[in-house]
Amino acid sequence: MATFRPTFCPLFRPLLCALVLGAGLTAAAIPGAAHAHGDVTPQAVDTSTLPQLGKEWKQENPYRTGPAHDEALRIGSSAYNQNCARCHGLDAISGGIAPDLRSLDSDCSALADPKKKQGCYSEIDQYFATTVRRGRTRDGRVYMPPFDETLTQEAVWALKTYLESRRPQ
Ligand code: HEC
Image 1 (tube, rainbow, N blue to C red):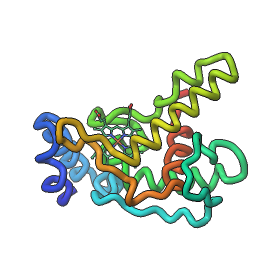
Image 2: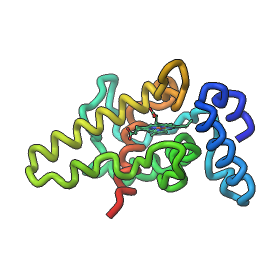
Image 3: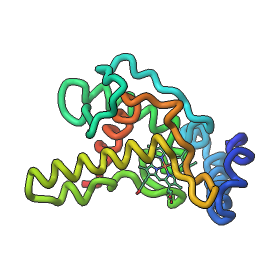
């Protein structure tokens, strides 16, 4: 948590910053929790055991189904803890600092028409990949750092696969 403050805090809205600091202190008070929140600098993720996808970005999560799913889930789970949990919450349960990512595609799951459902998932996947790659900056404030330099396409879809496993029932 220590390097988190000087790096991001001045860029956050003061309220958000206070929340982040508060969360950091709370986490530090619980043995193990601070560590589980992961490092502050974006962490590279080893995705060499996944089917390689090439340079062109896929329109949707290629690991959602099929033989690579389980390995993507394993990698995505650890990648999430290293890179996202400190803001989006442990086990993807948001503490309110950042959006809860478990229900990102819940509107899609509710669609009855299979074609529409497919299109909806694809749209959310693209939204997800773009957001993770670019991060979120508004009015010069960094709400979320960009991960384009750190995470491969394989890592981004592994993260999505993990979040799909955390969808609310
Ligand atoms: C420094 C804190 C921080 C980190 C680290 C972070 N995020 Fe975020 N993220 C945010 C905040 C804050 C928002 C909301 C931004 C806004 O209001 O525009 C956000 C928004 C998002 C959104 C859009 C959600 C929506 O409902 O529209 C996605 C998707 C997302 N983050 C995924 C990730 C993933 C995956 C990771 C890890 C690779 C990650 N984030 C790491 C803070 C963070």
